[in-house]
Amino acid sequence: MGNSMASYERKNMAFSYWESKQWLSDRNLVVVGGGIVGLSAALRVRELHPNWKITVIERHPFGGGGSTRNAGFACFGSATELREDRITLGDALALELVQKRWTGLQLLRKRLGDQALGYRESGSVELFLKGFEQHSTVPSAEELEDLNRWIAPVTGTTQTFENIPSHPLHGMDAAAIEQVISSPLEGCIDTGLMMKALQSEVHKAGIDLVHGCHVTGIENGSQPRIRISETAAGGTWFETERLLLTTNAFARELLDDLDVHPATNLVLVTEPLQTLPPQPTVHIDAGYVYARSIENRLLIGGGRHWGIDAPEALEARLLETMQAIWPESKSVKVDHRWTGVLGIGQARLPIVQAVQSGIHVAVRLGGMGVAMGMQCGQQAAALVAETSFPASDKHLFRFD
Image 1 (spheres, one colour):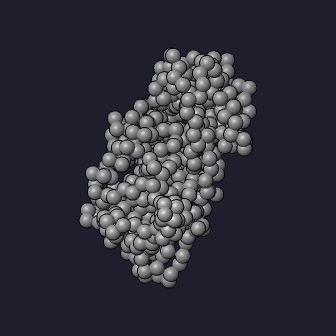
Image 2 (image 1 turned 135 degrees about the vertical axis):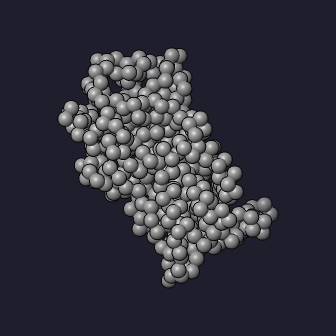
Image 3 (image 1 turned 60 degrees about the horizontal axis):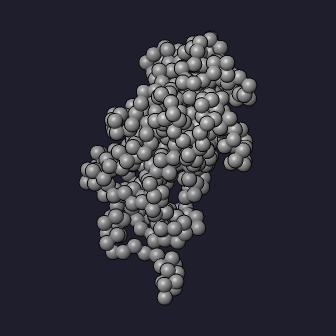
């Protein structure tokens, strides 16, 4: 009986009357994706339309996917990363991109407060290590001066980045360093505190937040229809007036013509070290490798540009890099390891737009979700709240 009933439920899965009525029926807006972007958008829409019925659906149990699995950098780009953006995008679009990051960080801090974020104004260093293959060359003094001039309209200073003669990292051998570029403007956060604070704001605003459910299809007719399941297949359909998709790297699972795809980063955190004062955040190889201190532990992550497929080999190379920066880390083991998924595409700018009648997306944050999440969420909220939704020909997006 037990097995046959379970099979019946999987085949004919339906929500109860109470579940449907309180969380899914007569929705003015459904947000798919409960990370920084989705929760920020829902909060802003609540301010614009206090009486709307809003539900946020998130398949991850802790609520956020990449938003709870990042490294907690409150950054807007290292000097060499921004140099690459300027080359790739041109000065105007690259400045627009860094403005989104800068504005998003200010919005996040203003909305939640530094204490709720666990924010620390750490400053940052970009390191160029001796004896390591480097993705990026050291910027010349002239290049750094030009970069500071270009970014000054965003940061409000002509001293965003500075070459410094010695490193400020505890326990580092100066002989291992070729060059250091510092910035006083960067910080770091406690990602878990941030998400708990955002979720608390959402609950206080009367927005329904549903965890552990998987959206497996979107059908667009006179109103968007959503198929939702407790698993990755099957499910029950329901309607909403408006739909906002904020699943970032996974958006193509539902809208396969979007220019966004997942890229995986490995993140490692050590056991506690005996002596480790707070450190500035660290960038290496145009931001492809990043490191920081968390209380008295060390974190390092990234390395996807190395093209290493074997996780064990990638971990070994990350640890080699960390041990060159902090030799003391040779004496401790890795205590936590996980993967974080970035949403990237051919273009660097995020996608925040209407894609069908009643359906909007806010995705492709390019590994800068902490920085751009709230800005993109508020931008998406403005589109959702102010756009009318005429009926259109039926168009089906789904996967099974």
